[in-house]
Amino acid sequence: MSVFYLAAALFLLGTILLGLVRVLRGPGSGDRMLAAQLFGTTGVTILLLLSMTLEESALVDVALVFALLAVVAAVAFVRQHGLPEPPDTPTHRQHPESTESRESNDDR
Image 1 (spheres, rainbow, N blue to C red):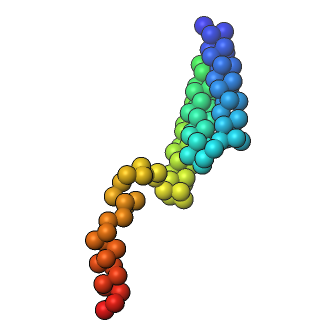
Image 2 (spheres, helix red, strand yellow; image 1 turned 135 degrees about the vertical axis):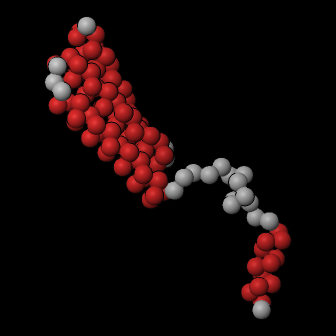
Image 3 (cartoon, one colour; image 1 turned 120 degrees about the vertical axis):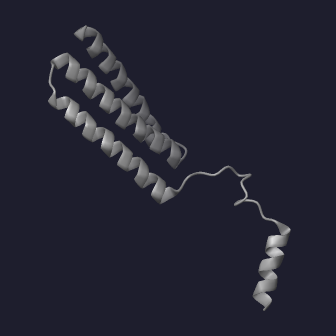
């Protein structure tokens, strides 16, 4: 069974390499952040697989720390960039009456 775990860990390492390409060439910051989340999730999974293969319980603790760091990175990204909103949300639409009321308030 340990050969299967090692093969799965190597496959996941390959997905991290593909994610690294997305981080370097990603068209937007959201794509880059999702790739960084892929690093966190896949890193935790690889550590858990290695923990089972090598029978090292300390790797589980390291995996938990990585999971917490991934959450902190996601929260920091959202706080800095904000959540993306679709273009048809009310905050993006300009209503004629709202611009007229602003202009009339400016005249007072």
